[in-house]
Structure formats: C-alpha cells, structure tokens
Length: 213
Image (tube, rainbow, N blue to C red; front, side):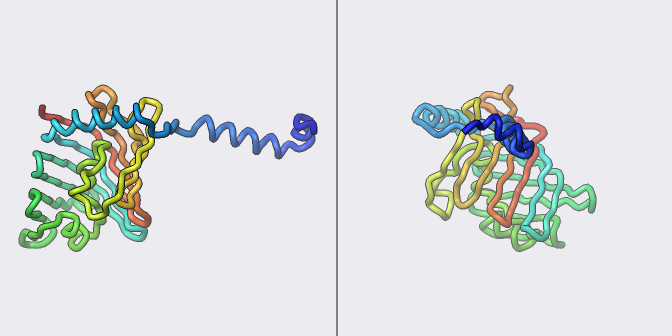
C-alpha cells in the first residue's frame, strides 16, 4: 500500500494527519509516576510541610454545573488555622470564613456569624459553593491531602509535567490540574489550579504567594 499516494488523492486525510500532529504538539507533557518522580514529590512535600504559614491572593470561580460564583480571594493559613476571605466585585459583597481543625465561623452571609465544625459544609449550606476545603489546603500547593483528613481513603494518583512537578492529581474523586507554576519559588508553587468532580468545579488563578519560613 502506498500511503503517500492515498494522502495525495484524499486531501481530507492530510487534514486528519495535520490535526493529529498539531494536537500532539500542543498537548502538555505528562510523565508516568516512577520511583524517582515519587521520591522527588515526597521530598517536595516534606519541604512544603515545614512551611505551614502562608498566604495567597487569587481569583476564584466555583460552579455546580448550573449556578456558580466568583470573586477575589485572600487565603491565610497558619498551621491548622485558616482565614478565607472572598470579595465579589460585581455585587460588592464580602464574606469571611475562618477557624481551625475544630471550629468554623462564617461571617458576612447573614446578620450574625454562623458557626459549625466543617468549613466545607458551611460554604455548601450558606453560600452554595462545593469546595473541599480540607483537601484543597494541600491541593492548592500541589500536595497530596493527608489520608487522616479526608473521608474517602483512596490513594492519590499523580502524573507529572516535563519539569517533574505535578500536572494532574487525582484524590477523593476530584481531579486537580496544575496549569502553571511560580518556578522562582523554592519549592515551586502553582499559579493555576483547576479542580473538578463533575458537575462541581473550582478554578483558582493565583496572583501571589507569600510564605513565612
């Protein structure tokens, strides 16, 4: 069979081939997890675990498939204590979620502060956002969430980009994609974090990280 002649006689075949080549060229590199990549990730996680005090500023968008919301996020983390403030420029509203491993307080949604034990439940019930906050505390830094802090005991799966940094992390039924990194930070931290568990989606474009040693 003369494949070159077939392509010459059928221009549509050229289109198929060129499209496949373009898609292959544009596709991000994904490396399989092997022992060296796993060891590098473990070392990266150990280094970041020592950096338990950090702040990020980002744009965040959340969707449940039908409804959604977005805003400007400032997230401060000090060990188990968190301070999560979202300002929606379109509506001018700001709400504030803060607490620790035992208590969550949500302010700015109703006239009085709302108190619970699970921050994700408060966001779901009072704001309508489905955000796995306990896991996201790890995922936002491209780390696996500790198994003792999540309900579903499933091993995280990671694929890596061509810089040996996590490109896709799958855990607790969520798929988290890391589109870009701040590679001047040590260790590098994500710039774009897209998490999905259809129909739920959380997208963060991080503008700045601040890490206290």
